[in-house]
Each structure stands twice: as C-alpha cells, then as structure tokens.
Length: 519
Ligand code: NAP
Image (cartoon, rainbow, N blue to C red; front, side, top):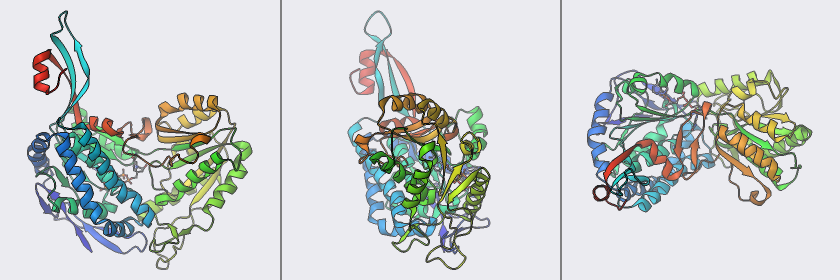
C-alpha cells in the first residue's frame, strides 16, 4: 500500500490521525492510505505566500511558461506508469486514463505555449489607456496584476490528473503559488504526479504544495488576496461559500459544480442522418466515458416525440456488446464508478429517476464486472431512461453522476427546447443538432446564457465537431447558476481568476516607463 504524503512548507509530511484507506474500485482492495491530521496548514499558507509568490511574480510569462513545459515533460516521461495508477486508483480504462493524464500534460503544454506568446511581461494590460483630462498627459490604464496570495485548489474525485493540473497551469502562469487538494478517494494519482513534479525540482520553493486528503482548518486561515478554485458538488460549494474568509475578507471563490447538461435534436434531423449519428455518438460517449463521471456529460436528451423510439434503438445499438469490468483488458470499454459512496449514490439516483421514467436499458441492479473478482467492484450498467413527463422537475434537478442519461420527448419547437435547457438552472455545456439556421438561432440566443459552452452542430461540422463533454484549454470551462457560476480555462481568460484588475492613473510617459510598454 502506498502512503500518500502531503507536501507543505517545503517538505513531505504525514498526519498523526487515523488513516483514510483508498480502494481500487475494480477489486475493492486497499491501495493507499491518506492522513493529514495535525498538519500545519496555516504555516503552509504563509510559506507559499512568502516564498512561492514573490519568486513567481519575479518571473515573466515566458519564464513561467518554461516551468509549465518542464512539468508537462516530466509527467509525460512517466506516462505509462501514471496510466496504470489511474486504472487502479479510479477504475479508468486505458482510454479514460489517457483522457485524464494526457489532459493534464496537454493543458500544461497549451498554457506553456500561451505564456511563451505573452513573453517578457510579468502582468497583462487590460485594454488601452483613456485620456482623463483635457490634455493628453493625464491618463488611466487598466492592468491585471497577479494576486499576492495563494491559490488553493480543491478538486473533485473524477479527474485527479486533469483537474489538478488544468488549475495549476493557469495559476502558475498567472504568477500565483498553489496549494492543491485532490478529493481523498482518488488522491493517489494526483500524489504520484505531484511527486514527479516536486521531486524534479522544476519550481521555485513554495510555488507548489499538495494536501493528500482532508484540508483540515486551511480555509479558516485564508486572506484577502487568496483564491479558492473549487470543483465538486453544488452542495459542497454552497457550504464552503459560508466560510468566514469568503464572507468577510473577500477571499475569491470560484466554483465549478454539478450540471444537468443537455443535448437537443432539431425537428429537421432524421434517423440515420449524419447529424443524427453525431447526436447518438455523443450521448453514448458521455454515458460510458469515465463511467459517466464527467461534469460535462449529457444528462438530459431532448428529442422530438416522433423520434423517441428510433433514438432508443440507436443508443442501444451504440451500447451493444459494451463490456463493463476491470479495465485490464482491451475488450472492457467501461470501468467501475470510483468509490463505494459513488456506487450507492448512482444506484439511488437511477432508482429515483426510474420512479418517473421507464428504463430503456441498464438499471440499478448489481453488475459482475468482467475480469473482476466475484462479487467485487463498484460496477453499474450504462443506463438509459425515458421520462414519463418531460416537465417533471426531477429530470432537471437530480444529477446522477454516473453512466446514466434520460430521454425527454419535446415538440421540436426551438422556444420550448431552449426553455427546457434553461430548466437545468445553469449548465456547463449543452449541444444542439440541426441544419435549420432559424432553429439554431433561437436555441443559441435563448439557451446560451444558461450555459458556459454551447455546441451548435450542423451538417458541415458533423465529421469534425468534438464531443461536447471534452473540455479544451482554449475554451471556457464553467457555467452559470447551478454549475457554480465560475470560469476556468478559456486560454488567456483563465489567468484573470488569479489577478486583480487595477486602474492606474497618472502621467502617460511615467506610466509607460513603469509598465514597460508605450500606452
Ligand atoms: P464533493 O464531495 O463536493 O468534493 C469535492 C472536493 O471538495 C473534494 O476534494 C472534497 O474533499 C472537498 N471538500 C469537501 N468538504 C470540504 C471542506 N469542508 N473543506 C475543504 N474541502 C472540502 O464532490 P465529488 O464527489 O468529489 O465530485 C462530484 C461532483 O463534482 C459532481 O456533482 C460533479 O458534477 C462535480 N464536478 C464538477 C466539475 C466541474 O468542472 N464543474 C468537474 C468534476 C466534478 P474530500 O474528498 O477530502 O472530502
């Protein structure tokens, strides 16, 4: 068993409480222990603020980009080992492990490229200078300066690699030191990656710290320049928002929470069309990739009533022959959910939805995973439901965070479709499929404000559109309302979370000299 250590105040440490045991979700064997009790989180914050912050702020974007590039390389060199840890840590198939681990190195590398472009500056200008007086001398210029605090990253269990490093990439490039905390149940993979990066001595002292498990009293010690970037359940986000530093010190809090993402088919698309096939492919991918444990996965499938049966058949075909099991063998296309708690929640969620829907395929019954020990492992069948009543609030409120989606028949009318999407009260991403521009326009402007990202699929992109569940470093990740109201990534936009916007007013020439560029 691996003992997960935390890296705080420049050293690897283990707590003095009772160990939390991490379990391989395919076999239910213990794989690692985590223990953070008694660790000095307040000192860790001070160390990161006082050592890591100044060191990173003394560098320019190009130098910070070099750090990201070196991190990406160091991790890539150990890719094969990391893919194996991913399998035994969170039950991911090889494809799912690549999605997570390569997502981490890819995002580091993408932000390294961005940093190289931003070049020799240590901060960014925001817009151009404005004249503030009758003469041209007295001007105002907005700038984005890195916050002189610590970026605390709290991550969900489902992407221990990508979730950890997409946040680190943006914060370090912006110039903020990081304390990263993965979800305890799948912290092993994040720990192995962190060890590679820290032991390679790539980063200045204090720039990166790691908590292998519970973060104890850390949040109580946050200050006005610190930032928390949280990913997890909306209920946890709501609880954390009530912490004193967020209420009384304006410590910045960014939340990426859950989401009832939608896919909607236009009335013009017929079974067998290219767009139909894309729609079906995206639904099947999102039901099965990472056993449906993707915050961006399609949960609500809106389809014109006359096509419900054809869609059920097409999705069943897409799932045909899919093997669920211990992802050691190529034939296994879907692994288990990540923990016993997840298994319980997913089964309960399916049972709750099934009170108001028919199960088309799958269900909440126990599943014997292929190649898994008899009766062991947290396996669930990919489950498709058909709602009895599309307007029933349960389908717009209950996120079953597993391999589960629900078909919700609608009229095909764009106004109705957009208002149904909006009933999720804020999604990370939705996708719409049609060749009718008027229909797409109505969906676009009525549904876009309820989404962080909206994929509009027409025939011309049917062979090139990426699955909506795929988050890209240069596209915004986040969403309004229930999805947390946060923003991450989106290329350069992602840096803003870790910066303060300041309006500097003064003599144009003097400001040009101070800022190092003509304004
Ligand atoms: P969770 O139970 O809310 O946990 C998320 C994180 O919060 C974990 O690291 C957890 O640590 C930590 N946490 C809980 N209580 C805390 C406290 N008092 N102080 C500090 N940290 C605390 O969520 P999850 O089960 O890991 O993830 C599933 C949910 O995340 C789903 O609802 C999914 O939709 C959402 N999600 C959203 C996104 C997105 O980008 N929007 C991405 C992935 C997942 P411990 O594990 O140590 O308790």
